[in-house]
Length: 297
Image (tube, rainbow, N blue to C red):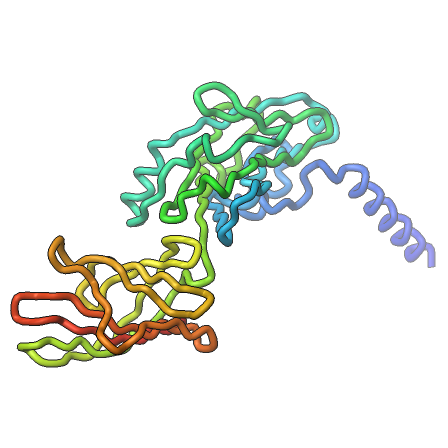
C-alpha cells in the first residue's frame, strides 16, 4: 500500500514538473528528427517542421496571412528559457538556383513586392536577412507574411531560402544546419497528375496511339499547361467554367499554331475530371490531328 501511495505522488510530481517546464526541452519534434532528445547539456534551436516547406494556394486576389515557417528554441532548463536571444537567419537567394539545378524545378525568388512581413518575433534584418527574437519565456516563433494574391503571377512558382548564420549561443539541431527552403505556388483545381489516351492522326504515316502520363500545371485561374499530344512542347488548356468548353492554345513552331478541329469541340468533364480534346496543327504534308482524353488520376 505504501508503495502505491509513493507511486501516486511521484506521478503527480512528474505531471507538475512537465507543466512547469513546458517550454523546456522534453521530447520535441526537432529532437526526434535530430536524434538529440534529452541532451540536457545544451540548448538547441532549429526548424521543427523540416527544411522544405510547401505553401500551395487556390487562386486568390486578396491579402492572405501565411505562417511561412517556425523556429524553435529548445531550452535545457527554465533558466535558459528566460534568456533574451536573437537568432539571425541569412537569406541565400542563390541557393534557389542550385535547388532548381538539382531538382529540375523552376522556382524564382519571391519578390518583396508580393508580401510584407507581419510577424513581430521574426522580423526583417539587413540584406534580406531575418532576426528571430526570443524574449524570456519564448520557445517557438513564426515567420508570418501577408501575401498579395492580386500581384501573384500564376504561371510562376516562388521560393525563399535561409540558413541559421548566428545561433546566439544556442546549438543548431543537426537536422536544421542546412538550407531552409519555403515554396509558394498557386494551384487551381485543374492542376495535378493525369493520364492521357487518344490517337495522333498523321496524314502520311497513319495513326498512332497516345498512352502516357501527364502533369497539368496552373497557368491561370482556369488554365493549365501541359505537353502537346505525344510530341512535347507546351500547350495551354483554358476552361470556360460557364460552358465547360476548352480553348487549346500554343504552337508547335512559329508557323504551326494549335487550331480547333472543324465540327468538334474540346470540353472539360467535371464528373470524370477529364479534358476531352480535339485539336490540330498545320504541316507541309497536311494537318496533324490529335484526339486525346486527359483524365485526372
